Length: 618
Image (cartoon, rainbow, N blue to C red; front, side):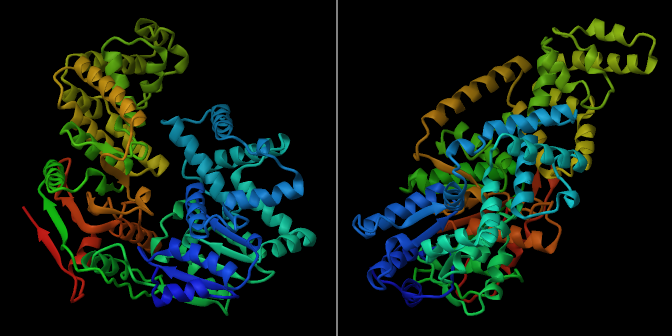
């Protein structure tokens, strides 16, 4: 196998710290595995002295298999593992931990849910809120944040602190640890116990880390301790692909690598073997708008290829129609469906396009990545109103919507089955509350006689659900664009049915079909992915949808560092394409005017002599 000069330098690096900046398609996995072989065969390093750390189990297994093939089954003593696997190995040796000591995800979920119930917290989507709380607990631990100063985004800050402390107490009481504890406990052990520190430093004399841009502070603290013995730390990453700020990772650790290791060798692997010239230079033009990054002279030996195509549409419906027709055209020319990827900023947006493609007979895959819109808590609220209008008297249905919008109706007045007359009697003598109950009854009656589209709009405007959402956005600092997207898409889907019962039947059939498709899911279809979910993947054809202000960059991105992360995310999306890249945006989304993303402006005004783009307008 032939290597370029930078790859050879990385593979043959001997001792001391080294940082390899590996751009998209530059062959970093190949370089890592060949470097491990080179250390063993040329430098005589004992395979058991080598540790290779990745961020996912799948990546570790893939690299292990690749190395096994490269070394023809020899040198199996090399350790390939995730951060958590490596750190848990260290803890097992010190504290006799077993797998039973790791708290299971379902127990975490149940504990946090019970704590929220105990605190009588109001929330709309249990799964989403619990996941948010657990994610924030992980972030606090991983970043060593002072819990008394942390402001939760999921629930009231004081409630979060109470749940955090209760969760920690529960772990101690039951002698359990979570994945973040593995890192913290490992760091504390190695800092406090010289015997263990020296033993593990001598155990792993050569440490290699993949996707270094995704590392967080706690992980890096442990890595630095382990590497302090022999200082043979070899890291590979791309600061332009650091997109997990919400998990606590930050490109700053990579950018500051030379502050920690002033003698570190820096190697730039800047030849992209994946993409055509136009894709390489288009993505480079966008990335170079960021200030806080390493400069890279990204280039390619591939042909210029097709232009990067930017398409503007009058409406979202026009954008959907083009997506269907263009994918059909591509498939007709011989492109396999599984060589095509459709990337969206969020699950909600991705589901909208997947639904349209499937309704037009185009197979899609990667269902696990895209959340169905009917699973969203807003959809569940609206559909609950409709079920009640059609006769449901389930207490759980009434409890879901009685205070959406806020009516101050007490849950204690809702019986099983729900009795509207009993509810009225409960507020006899209270004129204000009686009027609210009568309005609820009247609204339910009105909805019953409406078409699905009219019913959704009446629930939003007449019932006051939009007002409830506005308050929710303000109180929870939630993303306005995403929540209103759900309502708008729900109204669009409702417009395809004549009656409420027909719509509910259609939803049930749709969900059954989706479940069946998930069970039989293969790669024989267009890949539907979020931009985050596309990282590390590549496709011949990539279509990036809704490249508008408010979508990418997201409207919650306000600070400079947030905009830079959004730009890095867009860069990741662009660099998934091997042969053809489409960037699509509508001038209107759900009857609201939009403007194309500033990232498209940066691309169209880029001054690269070899870059060719084309702009298609209505």
